[in-house]
Image (cartoon, one colour):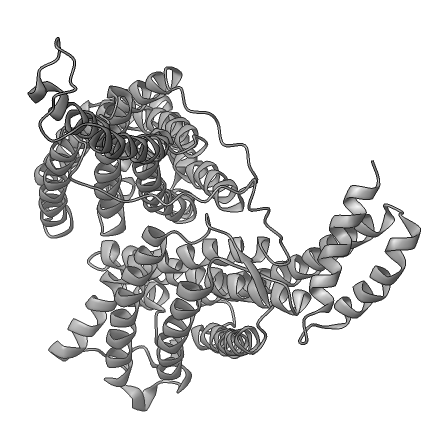
Length: 594
């Protein structure tokens, strides 16, 4: 019983010692591998596992301390009374991004020069749709950096140089990191293990710090946009605190039209940069989990799934989802015009009513569809995929964790509405909206998690191999018959017509090569996945681009106060926005696997 793990571990050590570019852990494993064949003790694998956990713990501690430092500076830089300026935050983020760029270059060079650095790849990590989404968000992030450079360059004479250097370094960081994740997301690295773990954790922490900075800047900008018509100049300076020194806020004015275009442009592109940082963080975490990992290809199934959008579908989910998407865009435009651009309370009430009715209908349909999908899974005959999969584990954790943000906002709204008096129609719609938001998140998480844990359909593959074998046998039999039967067909049985005998092999081949029809369960699951995907896109777009009734509805503001309620929303809403985009990626995977 003890020989098998020792043998596997010795094989691992021999493969590590054969690398010419490892570190001293490989030397230690080489020395221990010379003793292992004679000792046959199971302590070596245990000590190796302990050291693996020790290396991970060291990198986690490094990430925690850097994240706390960045969080402290970012949150302190948002308030003017604290002696931490925004250029201090920019300096820290610039230094962190430069270190990450240097480490990525070192990683790419070291793995390219060492042929045994990457012995295997995780087929589940970094799927093409996730990397495609990362590139899409990276493009918009680069456009945002260009707008930010143009904005700061409009009055560079009264700004610190770090405010112009920061977007330049961030653009380089986005390009280098996107290339790194595109080619290395599936790597299972086996050289410089501790350095790689620390480098990946530093990359993850840097992305989270950039995310916190972007969320803070966007929240301050949104609050300034809501209150700029009704506040004094002193409060304006306290709220604006984005990209300007506190002592020169009146000197550095953005009065030109091109400056206003750059300013509004890069604030509108902040949601894409926020999603880019979170997507990159998720992919880097999976790479960190795969450092030093050996994959058993006998138990690690590799599924080559093809994305066929317009095949094997009834188009019901796509059409209904597009209707929801287009309707949501119309509601968003009307909401922005009537709430943010108009001062009349009647138009504001109409916009809120229209917003809540649309979301109630959308969330109700999504909840019913998710329940139906979960019921269909009860009749699904596919086996559960119980193999180790860090990507799927992270997907489930992100879905459950990010949903907590929207749960918190909904429960705070429910308490405020129930405890407040008097109650009007908007309060009733708001209460229904909050309850449906909780139900929809719960049912959708159940549906997605069940879909991610199902094995892809194997019947097509089995059917294809069966076709190949039977068709080969048929062709062999046809050849044998053609050798035995003369051209005149004189040896045919009297009861069999020559035309029937001749057409039998071709009919058999045609029936064997005919594609197998998809069953109704898989078709329904595809329709459900596509409808939920499109619905989550519009539910991501609406709060990400300004439709936030939490600040426009007076019930919560009057109940919790002008300071507590905005703080709750600013903390929890980014997680809710990220949940929608991550749900889109997960639903796309469920659609392809159905």
